[in-house]
Image 1 (cartoon, rainbow, N blue to C red):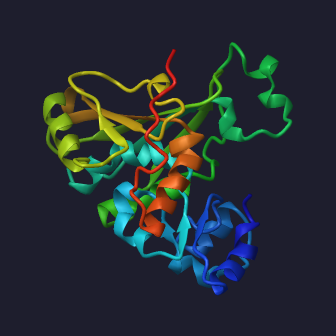
Image 2: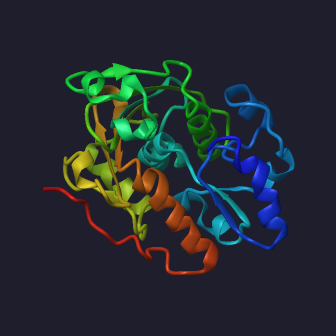
Length: 268
């Protein structure tokens, strides 16, 4: 849980242990930003040491880290969906919009009336509008990719399913590209990545195709006037949490990165 790791991590590190932290306590590199969105940080001296645990972007840092901050579920899907265009400088860095839908398990297992079947079934709602705590995490990682500060408008939605996230990122290209050209760029960017699948042709991601797996399916789609929609789908409980933690653990321990993670989606 948030606030717990910052109080216990130091003791493990002093004993020579390596830590993969699934809370948000060490994800944000700026202490002031963390304290604005979460609470006072009781162990800020460890913040610079933490490697952000998105292997597709920080594999080498993770391998040598004592402390790995497992990413949030929404940032994982959103950043992987947009990363190739931000990193290569193909996209404008203004007016970036990310719209994401998540199943109810994204809010955990706590007893909450708002997450009960009667409240969630047959309905869709936005939540955390302009206030969701994954917003600064997404902005941080897009800024790192761009090499300059980037802001993002992020809105999550709760939808009536158990698991899965579909993130839709709206970008403006500096110069128009076709969907075919965009897919080629994505294939080149993610070449050799064991858990990112760039979908072929004009296919778009579906949450059921990644359910129960550590895969992230991504696909950019070209629109008129240089506009592009970037889509990313993950299982929020696997690639968005526990699977990513195992992937990071494998890297930290020098194991094959895919160990224990080769399961395919549980599509009927």
